[in-house]
Length: 110
Length: 120
Image (cartoon, rainbow over all chains, first blue to last red; front, side, top):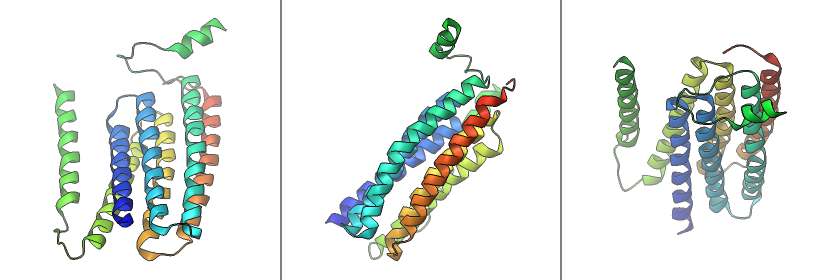
């Protein structure tokens, strides 16, 4: 029974991975691609690791999978924020149909 | 018109790859676990192919940095899926080390982007 729940978690995680990578290919802008791919792929990989934890239980592999979930949850938003800030500072333009750019206004205000 | 044609062509290629992955090994009820593990590997490989496409032709270096970051997280998922049928505990060790190394590399590349200042 618990194997079927683990397989369901892994399939949901793979679907999130696939949607994130399709967004990485097909969206028009750096910031849109960053938003879609980082959120979806982080959640998908964490779901795959949780499925592995359900398979193994509280053995060495399961505890290491939980540790890896915590580590990815902590580091992926930090790296995404650093990439977005670096891209905006280095002069990558927004898509021509984007509506607002708050970071540019704040930089002009300072 | 030309842009819309290219958009539709890309959509058709992605749908053809997905249908091929879902239906390629014919389903049988006896050994559904090994067949589903094969499909997991195929789907993760398709995600890696998408990331490599974005690394190959990103218009700006920021696209390439985003794709490298995503590729690192996908390889952690690859190690997790490899740990299921083999039962060996050191695949997830490789996953933890890869996540740490990918995070440090992404931070370094973001700092490099921040100081560069190219035009478009």
